[in-house]
Structure formats: C-alpha cells, structure tokens
Length: 235
Image (cartoon, rainbow, N blue to C red; front, top):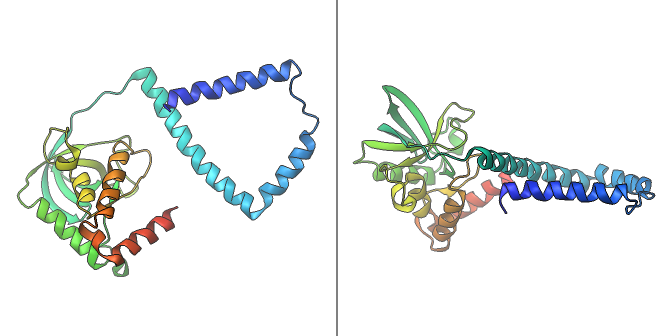
C-alpha cells in the first residue's frame, strides 16, 4: 500500500468514527472500565514492550506517510550521480574518495561488512579482513566511481552515505553497484537505517540468495552466527 493511500484510509476512519459518534451509534459508557484495564496493561512489563515496538512502527509509518505525501505533491526528481575519484578502501564498506579536490569518507548505504579496522580491536575479526580484501580486489583497477545519494546524505560520524556505482549507468545494480555486488557475492549483509531505503528490497533479496547458496562468507558457520547475533542485538 502506498503512503498516500494510508493517509486517505486514516482520514476515512476518522470521518467514520466522528459520524458514528455524532449520531449516537457509539456507546462510550464502558470507557472508564476500558481505561482502567488499559492502564493495567500499559504498566505491565509486556505492555511496556508493546509500547516500545509500537513507537518504532509508528515512526516508520510516519516516515512513509511524510515522504509519500511529499512525493505526491512535488514528485521525485532522479538526480545524476556525483563523480568521484577513488583514493583507497578503508574496509569492506568504507572508502576514501576525492570529490572536487576534497577527500571524503564514504560509507556504503544499506549494507554492512564485519569489522576489520575498529579502534576496539576486540570487534575486529578475520571475516572483516576477508570482506575488506574482497572490496579492494573489486576496485583494484578502478579509478572513477559514481555516488548516488538517498534521503539522508551523512551519518552521525560525518561520513557521506552513498550507493557507489562502477559506471554512471544505473540500470544493473547487481553487477554495477558496489553495495549490491558485495551483498550478492556474500561479503556483506543488508542493513536498514531509515530513511535511506531506496534499494532495501534489492539488498534483502540478494542477501537471502547469497545465504541460501552459502556464497562468500556465508560458507562459514561462525559468520552466520556472527550476523545472527548482530541482527538480534539491533532488533
């Protein structure tokens, strides 16, 4: 369901409830009892857990409604990717590029590779080294990259967030976008940080295909356990 359709449904529900109330079709006599029971549920541990989940769902729904309404009113223009020169790979999902004579740290949107250069050395592991080596291998003969941005362009660390293309032709993500290639070949998993979700469905499918076929790092049981633990932590 599109976001604008959600807005129309919510509006219709409000109008319907208002009509029913104004014409005496709704009996509010039991509202005090319902309120007391609701208060008991809310104050329970399970109730607090439900509230936390509801807040997260509401935040995502509000985001979808906002951007859906914005797109309905103003449309969405497809911007051209920004050209950049590759300087070096930091790790599996982070690059240093030069844009207009400025060196810029780029974090690949929508994916995650294991740690290899974290200041906390306990977080680094051999799978991070393997993912980093794979990214470097993919880009060893590459000089020019093309950066496509999503709704949010930088993260809390000041890094530029981008989908990194190997060419300015964006018709084949699986073979021309670095983010997707890493997931497809099993050296990265998908990770969603709203509001940047343009290729989330693509990454999710590629991750499942790679996992089911034991591609790349998925062939190692320890890596599978590592990813599962991280996903559980992020839930």
